[in-house]
Length: 486
Ligand code: BG6
Image (cartoon, rainbow, N blue to C red; front, side, top):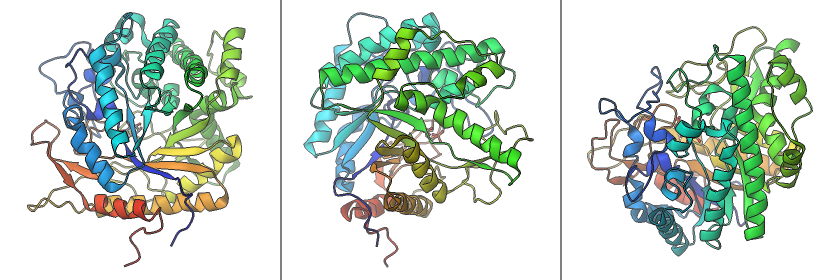
């Protein structure tokens, strides 16, 4: 029995528009980044194609068809007892190209209906403004976030959202996993810079100094846009709560050698705190100057922008947590192949996609973030991708999900007992959707099974997994019954 969770704890589940909606070219929607990414797998990176080629398969074009089935899905979320649904808005539904003056009314109307449907069941939407998504036109014609003109396009977009959905949405996340912008993977998915290699790789060791500078300049523009959005959101509705969203990285030293300990500290800093310090403290980390100097990174940062960053710090921190990795001063990091962001930890059991399962690392990270910033924390993604099969009677026995989630919820409860202020937790993912890094449908995270395969075959009908029933009990008991009680 765990008594840790506060009364109004926000239990729920999460998705992202480009991974679940489908309907990629309907009702006036423009093309988005992920619409140009082909299907891949653990060994084969997704390709980013300049045009939509009929010879390739683009999984986000179908997603799990949530655009058409949102009412059915939200009813299922309500059945589980969700208090919040973390979802994202597809920027190219609101501004199809991103640089037009007037928004697409069909897009605005769609999300209004979604939010109203959530509220009908008392589900509070938590909305990511951009989740691996921006209009393709802005990438192609403007070079994505490397171009400071992006700030004004983003501001026009967020002003539309804050005005149109005032009263319907009160919790916003400005950029999904903005910290991926520090490596090649994020150049396209978070910063909209089309990769020269045409592949969605984690890190490109051959990136030139100019490319690396461009990447960090793009991040700076995102920071400024995020800070301006925070300030504007508070002006439009003082009840708006604004969060940053990080991919939560845990790095342990591979050995107890001081050099490895130092390497782990550096990795924690670059992968987590480079972005968080700016968004939570309103200024770059004290070690940033040396970091830039040693990598020949040159940035344009104005005095006015420094003020904007100071004024627009976030109200809370949200992050995803899946796994932990190791750092070593010797070995080159195992980047660029598959979807790993560090060296595997020999002490940990791995998922089928090679991610180290580490609930204690979750507690560790919650404590680290809270100690550093003392802001409320919300975990907006946590889960495990699995191969699954539906039985003939429509049941899905996803024991792996249940045990992964159970152990992580226990670790979160421990962190709360440690004194960490945790306000909510949304499982990744509420329903089966297309995996972001590989584009696979078969890498299933959902509490609800969707009958579709990587090639888009299937009925797309929804089925409750065992984890659905289990999570329903967890929520009903406010985290006290985790299914071990017998
Ligand atoms: C997070 C992203 O990095 O991880 C999600 O915010 C993504 O969009 C999730 O789906 C899991 O990663 P993947 O690649 O297995 O889908």
